[in-house]
Length: 70
Image 1: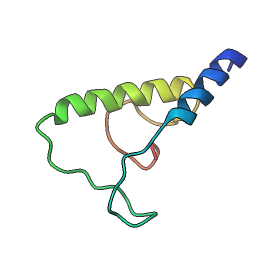
Image 2 (image 1 turned 60 degrees about the vertical axis):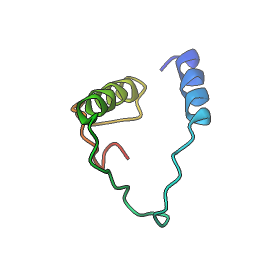
Image 3 (image 1 turned 90 degrees about the horizontal axis):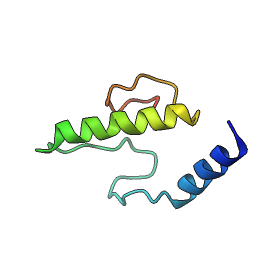
């Protein structure tokens, strides 16, 4: 990874703010039924591909929320 790519990844990671949940710390997130599920799956696959290129994700770019993604 180039130095500039690493800096960009670190900036992106530093800007990340998780959604607040009522679940206890360490609990697996739950996903409610969503009418935009297809769009969400496509966005998740795009995120997996980007994270994979940056070396942060080792798994398939299938849009599935998996333990490898966490």
